[in-house]
Amino acid sequence: DGLNIGAYAFELSGIKEFIAPRDLGEIGSLAFYRCRYLNKINFSNVFGSIQRSAFQETNLHAINIDSIGGDIGQDAFLSNYKLSEVKIGVAAGELQSGAFEKCKALTNVEFEKGPVKIGSLVFDGSEQLESFVAGEGLLEIASSAFVLTEIEPLTLKTIVVDRTHLTTIKLPN
Image 1: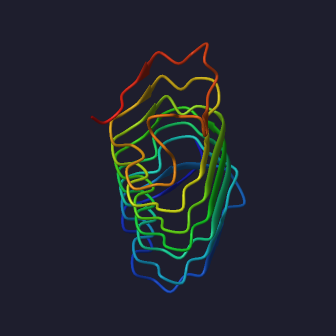
Image 2: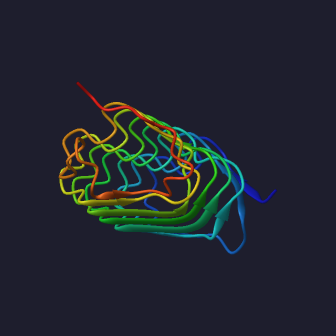
């Protein structure tokens, strides 16, 4: 339940800030696509998913969300060049391919619980990424998830997970 933001709802608009006074149901595909002035979002819960390319090519600096009930879709935050920090309390779904791709200023990503899966190329080209913390519930990290980041994918020492629930890690050759 909650307010749904439809596909293309604010695409290419001059919106600078999005504040949701209540919980959101779902954020549709390309809802804020190329809103180049959008630098702040403020909402606590998304019961559904953040769909494909919902915030692609915006100007977000940080993301802080209490919970997301579904997936963070393919390319959801692609090319947010100023995005430096992501903090999400609970992520019940998966981070789909390219979700945070080319977020060149991104240094820290933290989940208190989840996500269930990190898809391929999720952080591809997020060159400054140094720290990734996943909470209880992470089951799989796909190959190439951390390509072109500062994280050393073969050591995984900068990735912290609740190991009682981790079942598969797929590393690139």
